[in-house]
Length: 553
Image (tube, rainbow, N blue to C red):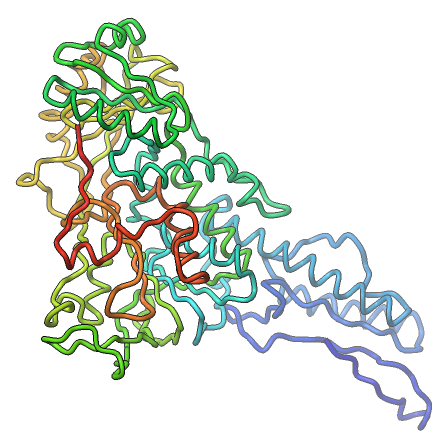
């Protein structure tokens, strides 16, 4: 903002005041001139000269016509105060700044409404082309729930002290695993770190209306339903169920061990044939809205200053630190990444330099690793990031006589699951296929014969009222499947001094995103894990061939 001070040519030497000045943005947004403060037009500084009221009225009308010509669709239509027309220059300046700040946040709010789809898809020429971030402190590859959680935790801790950029290829999240998941969260694991991650995840969900709130906007509505998980075990899996239960209780989980007779009394709709026992989550287990969690994390990260870029990382540059050698046989030097090539949707390629890289690209994290030769070299570099996409189906069925409001998310001994969806007799169900029956990943088409031959017979046997269900709809999503041990890979890569990995959660990412985001933040800012020690999830276990399996029932 500036003032143009000049004297009147008709009265040399006599100060007439600043007649008027205007701050125009140097950026062009869709061919229109918009303000540089956020996404709203910068308030015009109007200092009326000493002239007649009629000429001043004409001038104001001209200004109004010009402003209407470049009307900003994100700007509030009715300013509450005309503080930019105070006679006192100091009051006018403060008023202009106040209006600018107010309009900035008004614009941000309306942009988020576009993102959330409340006003439909934005018109292309109304979407602001933000300044390209040629450099950042932390570059996160992948803007799903994991990448957004990392961005949020970094910005929440460091605020403006850290510049965070997130690159996401699927900006509408049409193929994102998060929005296509069932949204379950449980503590019934056999690996202690997984239990701790989910415990923090539940705490985060409960506090999300406060943690992810933005002033002037609707609070997050993750809709956590704490109805628990019910894990069932046959005679073959009884000992493992008991062992898991003891560990989970020691870790602070609120669970109840129930034998078949008690299960039948508690859930009359359940057929317990072939079931020896089950474990029911009494607290901090259930399901929630995964899309709302993703949107709320992204929205909050942006409000804190993170920048999202719609594009795909297609290249990474690094340099060798010749003074540090990790391997003797292959003389593998420690590498330092410093630049990424990002291909935009229109094919244009741009670069971003960075200090730290985080790979959180979900099912495509292995492809990102290949950009720097992970899996294509010798020694340590011959070992790839063992993550690939695996397609999973979710079926929505209507069963008016199905289990009621007290129904938990039930997991059959063969891995088939179902849970209630809303109050209209709808249920979500699914099953992971056998290794030799994995479906192709070329598209997200759903195989309904898999439901007819595998899912329906199982749930109809377990809940007889499901015999009369009707398949309403279905969809498919991708697991970021860790082919090594189906557990997350978290932490610094041993050959790269500034590359962190957060991927391979194999269906558990949505419930562990909060904990992993906090853990990566701690590693970057503190240099160590401060809350949950996740060292066992490091890439080193893959190099040493020491898998960390979940002991399934």
